[in-house]
Image 1: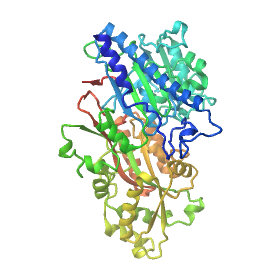
Image 2 (image 1 turned 120 degrees about the vertical axis):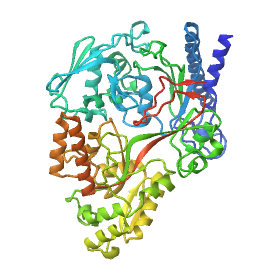
Image 3 (image 1 turned 60 degrees about the vertical axis):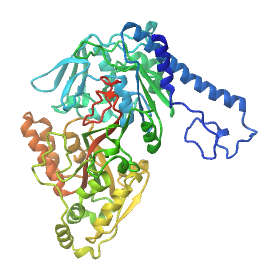
Image 4 (image 1 turned 30 degrees about the vertical axis):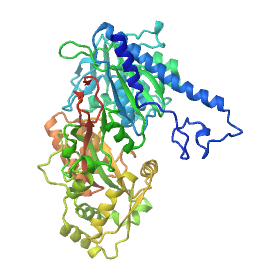
Length: 599
């Protein structure tokens, strides 16, 4: 009986998963789809071996079925040892996943997957406090230059052919040294190398004192260093697996996390299975995780994703697409009555600030000839549109109007009782235009705003409101990759941007305007010597309360100079089925599945 139950689970994994590509006129986006399915008509082509194509399709399907069977065997073996729910958590990743190597965890899609497979020395809890993960505790030297971590001695890497007899070995301090050195290794070319720039000691920055003691040495005191160590970049990896798989480590990950890698058919399905040797336990002494596996789909259409969610083929949906948000939510951001009881809406403050950025480099020809070089014009734009109405009608109240600076709601340095931000004030906006020499906008050249397709409606809303006070804005929609390239090369004068926290410290936001930083993160090329001096002082300030005040002063300086137009402070939005239990949200929007169960 138990065996039949678990075999049933295997087929549930495949339900709604792999599908044979249909013969149709439209070209599929799947990069592996044979040319025979890209033809307008299903007809013989002289350069196609039909048998070979068919065999390839069958082979891929068999790979996924065999992987599912393997995952089922894992579930079966688990059930013989202790009783589990026999459930697999399913979610969709519309952006795709470029790598499962934590050294390349540069975006949310990679971070979510990596978080299931790996652990870091420390982690951030739901209250944005740093707590131990792979370490038991840590000490900080009096000069705050040396951090000593005492590691757990019960952590093992996943079983994998990279190890003798395929059995994962114990994690030791040398693995921490190896993993952090790997981030800074130019041959690896990790996009996370910047996290240690000018922060770690020039020599012996990472040291394994013994198997359970690791030391980190800094160049100078840097308070947010623990937050940096919680980033997915700093996940601990075994050198054996990296050496065995080489460049293919990106698709054959080996970590210490709650789930272990099973199969990845890129663009179609990603499967993880429960790590039976995971070190964490719940308050009752039961070993985590509760789930038996995780299945990731790659539907690139949000409407299709929502349909799969409604049909019960996905367990949750992250964020709500504009195409169906009014169907699900009221303008106040609550579930409509016909959805109550059917799905659960989870909302949580998200450390992400959406904004329009303005290039500030006065030596750049784009800036020399632009009215945006004038502070009065930049401030007039900030006063010239209604953030509250924008968030309510375009976002269904999902977010907080950014009227209090660049530091978002959710961080201790955020202070909504101190009004130094911008609010909707048409009179003040017109006064500023007049003081800049453009009464009612007369003679003011048209300003181009670069944005991406998903924010086109937002740009149009702001442009219409600014037109009422005499500021003409032309919204230009470009692809995200082009916008990132142009902002990095200082080729975008006025652009849409966002800054999501890498770690829970306001310093991460303030570094965006530090004059010695390149782009990224300083996309506006803002440079203000008094700002830079105070920023450097805040980094070494011991008193937490005083440092928070310094952060707020820095935030006020940014708002006064107006190199940005803050739009809103974001919010984590998740639609979840009622049978999903212990599914928590957090301000970093990490996907936390260790304690999730399905009923």
